[in-house]
Length: 57
Image 1 (cartoon, rainbow, N blue to C red):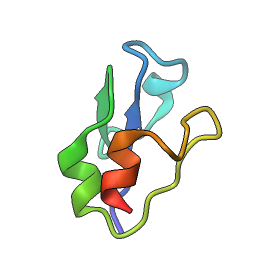
Image 2: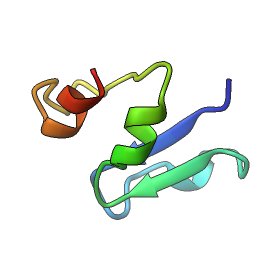
Image 3: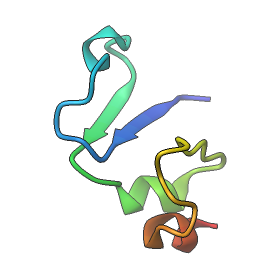
């Protein structure tokens, strides 16, 4: 499994601490990644009713 990290913030804290091989998307959710994902782990700060998460469910 290869993790990908998304953050709705443009400059989230700790982003520089991720290993280089981890793909990142900042400034919003990446619908393409969500739709292709086998597993989605959502932060408690993101509503599960968010349209992008609902579409990927």
